Image (cartoon, rainbow over all chains, first blue to last red; front, top):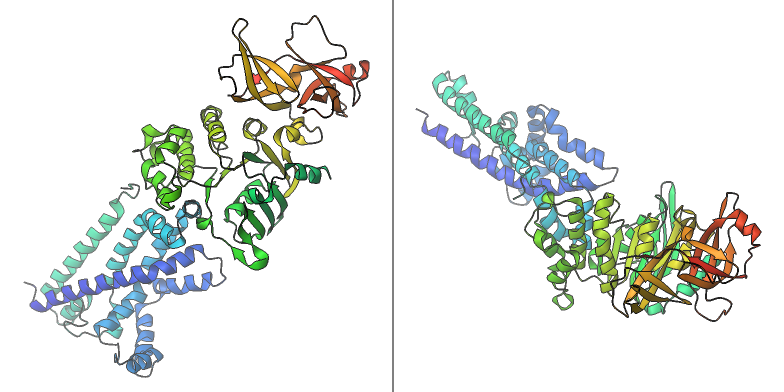
Length: 223
Length: 378
């Protein structure tokens, strides 16, 4: 039987992934839109920065986050000055770390979807009196819907599966920062293999189901 | 030089016209035009691919943000780069039909038509039924765009543009992506637009046939510059422009139906400076019709042929003879004979070079044009 603490870890994981995904859809959409349409020379740099978490060991990202959000880091100074306190080893800190870590998994599908739409539907919308905002919500969002769904699923799943960044900036505080991946690590360290099995199997099944939905989705259906 | 003169001739009252002066640079291509276009009828922007006709249309629509210039539509300034004015496309009261129909794939035909219509002031609304009827798409309203044929899609796209009650309709080769059969399906609808809409239409095309069927005015573009501009028949019949050099050199003449002869089943059409008898006309007396006379169907006689089977023999004067090396030459004739004050219609005749020399044809000469066939453009 999974212990009460493991249910707490599962709930915390889902909360973290949900909030991270929502934040990423809001933050990632304008970044992806800009990347898809700009001809600026900054495009390469921004694109590379967004993609960095794909190749960096999570511990590297976690280390820098720990330093910048710590008491002497610039972000840490700012959050203290704002009266929020310090972010490391809090749930809010985990959200910040997860957003950065899962960013490419949301931005890239969106960017691809926006690029595939091209210029023409926007020009058509403009000749039909739609302002740029209007055409974004009435033409781009519906046409890019498969991209949004892919981005949300990947962002959510990737956040659920994150371990290194959490360990670096979140630690292992029950009900605050102890997510499932960390809980499994704990059980194994304590040689509680049965409990580890339950959580690991749950993660395995969850991840498989997510990917199954993603790959068997029919993206060509409009309504 | 002559282009400038013709521009003066085509110039309508300033407040009713479209003034377009643009200078836009792309890598390897510069568009530089200064035009006054009539505020009514169909004006064809004609030229080969790469002549800048689509770019010019996009500049007028405001789709080329980097264009520099001045654009006024019937006295309203839409763009004045010198004063930093640029009205964005969605504020310009225009309709635009792209080369590919570009319907929104996620919306049904009805919702495609509604998209622009919902966004205009209710005061100017054309009824949706009017646009639907004009294009004959009533039976398609509930379909999704992917279930339409190419011709149907383009008709929906035209109706969608009309449903915004535009004050200017811009069409970028709306038939280019279609095969011959589909073209034949849409052309009659375009001719109806021309007859039934009171708004100016700018129509981009590289097909002389389309231009001849639809245009009242022609702007001939070459390498990003205006080569000639003027009334359609004047441009189409000019021997120094590529339009008349096409193998199917023809003249297109607007006339009015004056009478029907039920016994011989002929109709009389009045054109400036002459009358024509045609067969197979179903339009009523007083209707406006456009006829086509191919240069190869026109021959020239020095004396009035009293005993000919040809019905349409028109007194005419030679205006110009093409200098050419081949076996045939084009001769441009003005109907109505010597009287310079009377309105004239230009006709083209294709004759052999031998005949030209035997009859000693020369500009200013009085002759008779024998028109073997007159085609109705309906």
